[in-house]
Structure formats: structure tokens, C-alpha cells
Image (cartoon, rainbow, N blue to C red; front, side, top):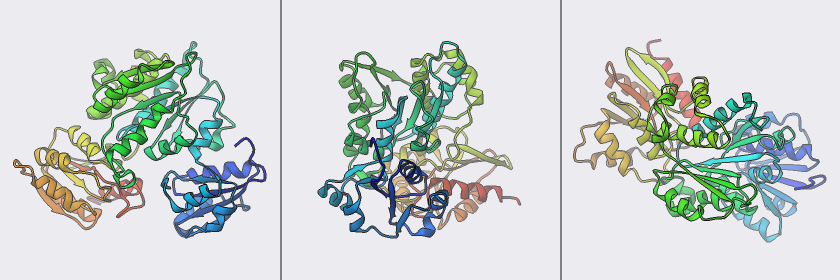
Amino acid sequence: MESLTGKKVLIMGLGRFGGGVDVAEFAVNNGAIVTVTDLAAQDQLAESIKQLKDFPQIEYHLGSHSLADFEQADIIVANPAVTPDNEFIKIAKQHNKLITSQINIFLELCPATTIGITGANGKSTTAALTAHLLRAGLTQKDFKYSNVWLSGNIGNEPLLTSLDKITADDLVVLELSSFQLEQLVQIKKSPKVALLTNLTPNHLDRHGTFENYCVAKENIFKLQKLDANCPAVSIFCAEDEISIEWFEKYKQDKGRTCLKFSPDDVTKEICDNFSLPGRANLSNLAAAATIAKYFGIGDEQIKNSLPEFKPLPHRLELVARIDSIAWYNDSIATTPQSTIAAIEAFEQPKIIIAGGYDKNLPFDQLGEKIARNAKAAILIGQTAEKIAEAIKKCPENQTKIEFADSLAEAVHSAIQIATKGDVVLLSPACASYDMFDNFQHRGQEFIRLVQKINT
């Protein structure tokens, strides 16, 4: 990647979240001849294409992939959503093409100290909290870092087009998905500081088994470069059985510092300044604080900076209180475990809106949690029947179960069921792709529907 001048770069997957846009702009600015190929049609990618309007030299091949593109390209930059066994990637390998990714290019070129955060749940909030706490150190005279960046799967700062602004004196916090961690195998490199928030089944439609998913996640540790002069830092949740096993495995490695965290590590004084509900968010805070303390941020600074932290949207987000009923948007909850954590965050009677795209995840534990803790469950999407069956399996089930054909219908049903003091919680436990573009689209629609109540 030392020089892209004159190279034919094929970007496989422009996407709707900015990653492909960032790669395309970076490649053009570095002298590459850029072609973008995506299975989605032009109208579906209109927003991403609009962001590249200043680069008319980019050629777009949309709606399908062409074998010729992969045979003629010098470098192929694959979107994380592209599976390793994709037929076109296989063809490119047969033609000895260089296959890489946005995150691979970034980690190869980034001069800063990088902090990678992954996990089945909570990684976005933890990444945002970590960056927030580290930025509190920028006011310290003895803090040796000049700036703190937040990017990766969370999508804040563009990765590659920010490279010319990032220096060796900076810190970069990266949220990393299992898909991105699979890609890092190509360069055998991972962030200097690596954190696992937790690990429960997710993306089994992609990985096939929980074991395969774990293997992808473990890359964040096993690909760390060990250097006795500048040790790699591995951080694990003390409540996670898998991470404890890995902790024992990796803590023996020379050039590695292994740290553990637990939600019980958070002091009452710090809790008093933290507004996010639930034990899961205390775990997120404990993880972020562990990293902050490693870089020299003290408890007092952590406590004082928390009131200024702005929670990320679609994560236990209070949308409105209407007639003493609280409406919460937790559209980010795309796994059963994340919805279980959301249910545990509230003591009030709960009406759960759940269901969506089927990632082949088990719903047994979620069904029991809903049966024991929810006043009603309004179920939507492909997984509605599966979740209902899981609820009914609980012998103590007293939960009212209703089905809805749309989110609008689900909100209408919740209005009919909810009474003063209740919480209505959109926490789907599933991805959104059966009914929406993404979890943001789903959350925004929920907000719109709630804000229309009584209007």
C-alpha cells in the first residue's frame, strides 16, 4: 500500500455507512484508478454516491459484479460484509490479486497508538465512553497524547481520509466488528490495546456456529504484536467465562499486559455521575474506565467528565414520557442478550416490542426473561413466531403476546396496553433487514411514531 499511483483499485461494496466512500476518496487522492462495484442499485446507494460527487473520475458498476473487474484490478478493497468465501474473492485470489480492507489499510498506515474494542454487545457505547474519558486527559499537563480519535465500525471519523491528520502522539479508539476482525487475519495485526466487552452468540447467519464467531473475535488478541518495550494490552470482562479462559492463555505471553474489569469495579461516586441505566452500562463504563486508567486518567477525572457524556442514539434512548408512560428506543439491540440487558435495566412494568431479521440465534433465554419480567410482548418481523414460542415455553409465563405486521401497528398496540408507570421498550433482539435499511432506520421510525402520539 506504499503507493497507489496508477494502480487499478476495485472497491467491492460501496455500502450505505460511509466505509466505501472513505476508501474511494482515499484511493483517488493517492493517485489510484478507482472502480466501485456493488450488488445494490444506484438509487439504493444514492447517498453514498452523492458524497463522492467531487470525484467524477470514479467508475461505478452497480447492480451486479463483473468477473472482468476482479481479473483486471491490481488491488481489491472488500467491504466487511463480503464473506471470505465469496466467489469473486476466490477468483481474485486465483489471479493473485492483492485483497485488503479499509481497516487493514488503516492499521498498516496509522502512526498513532490504537485501541480496539469488540464484543457481542455494548461495544459502541464502550468505544464512545472510552474516547470521552481519554479526551478528559487532554487537559492534564502530564497527559502525553495530543488528540483522541473515535472511528471504526461506529462510523464517527472516516478512517483513511483522516490519516493525514493523525500523528504518532494521538490515540485512536476503534470499534471493531467480527467481520473486520476476520479481515485483520490478512495483515496479522491488531490494535496495541484490545478490549472484549462480552461474548454471546451473534451473526450465526454469517459465521455458522458460535465457535466460529468466537474465533473471529479472538483475532483482536492473538494478532496483537508483542513487544517487551511497548507491551500489548489485552482487557477482558471478568464475568465472561470465555474471556477468563483467554485471560489465562494470553497473560503468560511476554510483551503483553492482561487486565480484567467488572461492573462491580465502578464506585458509587462514579455511578452518581453516570446517567445510562442498567448493569450492562455499568459494565461498559468499567471497561472504558479500565482503558482510561491505563493511560493515566484518574477516578476524579472520570467522575467529573461523565455528566458531559452524551449517550449514543438508539441505545436505551428515552424518546418521550406521555401520560406517565416512558417510551424507550433500543433499536441497537440486535441480539437476544442485548435485549435481556435492556429488560434488566428497568424495574417498572414493561411492554416489549421485539422481533426482526432472523440471524439464526437462539431465543430460549430471551423468552424466559420476557415471560418472567414483561407485562406484554408485541412481536414483529421474521422471528416473531420463534420468540413467541420461546416465551410460551416458560411454565410461569403470564406475558400477554401480540403480533403486529408493522412497527406502526406495534406502537398502536402498545398504546392500547400501556398504563401509567409502564415502560414501552423497543428492543428487537434481532437485526432490522427484513423491514428496515438498518437499526438506525428502525429507531428513527419508532421515534417518529412515538412523537405522533397525542398529536
